[in-house]
Length: 374
Image (cartoon, rainbow, N blue to C red; front, side, top):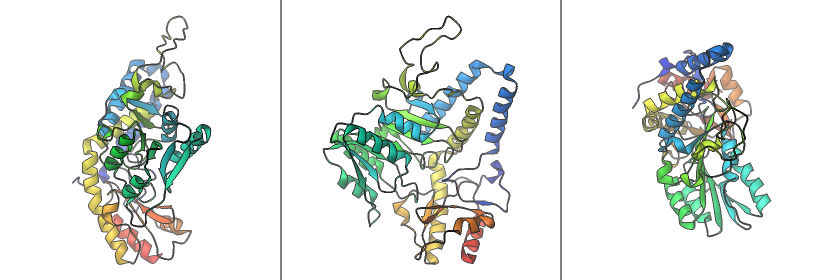
């Protein structure tokens, strides 16, 4: 269990931020790192090119450590959608093959597969939300020898309902299909082990549970995909020597670095991401999960006491949850709570409540006081 960490953030006492599944507040240290990055561009003669390379490698290593990978397996990219497009461009999909997704899955992890299936004459199989809440059983029932790609999350983004990827991964690999994971709503606040999952690709946006800025994301590519084709060709993913005569070598840089976006050595973002990942690593994703799980369990219990609908605690990851009203929430619910400085989001008709280590008992009390008044 981790002590309350509100002192590391700049959150006024009268603000209740329970919207981390949308975006976490920046740590003070991350904001300071951003100012440092801006000042470098403000005075470009101060830029140390070697420092930029070193920052990128430290960031790569930090993210790799959070998912049980090596720095060689990590590409620095602008979004999860970019990483999913990279995966789609580097996976086999025969005509008649199947791609499995979840009903209500995040759009970035659906559109790219719809496009790929249409181009290859393949089929999208959408696993319907199970009545008993057991996504794992439902997904396993949808897998057969026609499976080519399983594109799945550890939990459904709208309500944190859990999919046991350990079990699903074994079944996918037994068929000989590829496994692509969007871990944006899990990595950083729960344990991710790509070695155990043997994922082909994993993507994770950085502005949620990794506590970084926007336009910063990561792609894990398994070693078997280190020879693939990136979405871009630029001077940083080819062994170009810019100081000498202009040359255009055909080879890409080694391993997953070939999938880096152009301008991945962002002067402003990289120091921010390094500070954010360093703090997440220091806390530890498992410890974050163990700290937030009893907090969301208390919220769930208080919601059930009011006759509201919440999935069973053992059917979701522990760092956030969603709450439904038997008659449906009014359309202005989020705005009305926000007017009282209580910030949540509405997803799939449910109030999504996502705390973090800055959340305290007063925040939870205020949330329910305002909800009761509404």
